[in-house]
Amino acid sequence: MSHGSLPHDLAIRGDGGGTIIMLVMDGLGGLPHPDTGRTELESAATPHLDALAARSSLGMLAPVGHGITPGSGPGHLALFGYDPIESMIGRGVLSALGVGFELRPGDVAARLNLATVDHKGVVTDRRAGRPSDEDGRRVIERVRAELRAPDGVEVTLIHEKEHRAVLVLRGEGLGADIADTDPQRTGLTPVPAVATGAEPESERTAAIVQGILDQVREILADEPRANSFLARGFAVFKSYPTFEARFGLRAVAVARYPMYRGVASLVGMAVEGVPDSNEGSVGILERHFGAYDFYFIHFKDTDSRGHDGDFEGKVAAIEEVDTLLPRITGLGADVLIVTGDHSTPALYREHSWHHVPTLVASKWARPSADVFGESSCREGELGVVPGKDLMSLALAHAGRLDKYGA
Image 1 (cartoon, rainbow, N blue to C red):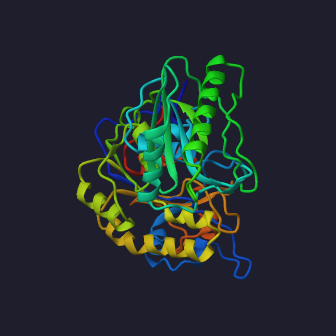
Image 2: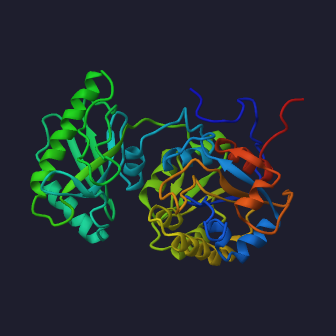
């Protein structure tokens, strides 16, 4: 099975090449505000991004395919040059790797949301009021102390961030073809954990998961907000070809949220510390610049504000990244890419299928506009770029690809 998108005989040059920074503003793409006709990116004051656009090739990114709404995992795998269809991996594995858990082949992982369920069993808050990291950790530790693990299965619960946690099951004969128990909106009861196929391994694992969730409801019955778990993104861990083996790039990831460190770890990127702020992320990038060939730096708030339906909040998140950009451009990378893993329009409040504005800055770029936004990127020379092909553009601009054919 191929995990990449480059033709098998498209050779990576063996004599090195330039450095690459990939800056990802999660959920960057937006929709026009009905009062102004401008998206969040177009509404933001971004003098540094606009100056960068004026010396960049512009285009729009289709993370997975036309009309397909990507999750964050497939979106990032595509950005890293892996075919998001053939390399599909569940969010649970990415979350487990992101918190530093050493998965073994055959482990089953799922992402958990702490949630609020009323006396009728109806979900009233899918995120339990977004508890602090301290309170979320307290709830997970309480469950961990009281949970009775089924025979023959090792159960690991790890707090991730705020309302998020990770469940890992280890044992013989486990499967991951299990329906998400998160109903995705309030006013509904949690979906039972059931196998989505006829494999006995997944049927057994679904029963184990449901038993765990039932115990959690009992253990947390007296909690005012976080009194239930919702599980999604079940996946079995398997190894992937590393980023360095495929592209000849020593790579490092800088991300505040565990899931994004997880997808980077999945493809063998190093993780140099856990930043506590966007400014801290840039600080880690600065400290390690020069030690690697490829630098992935991730900013989450653009996506979070989109999910909140907070148009002005997303504008502010974009503007914050813009204020940090001079420190990133000042590092002097040979190639700087700015993009997103998907669109999360504030007007839509969820991930969407819309293309993502993208720029590629290098001395080989062919500029076409002096502003970075959806409208200018639609007119750029890159056109609509399949997400999995962005890495080949990065490699070309960095002088790391040999000529194709005679």
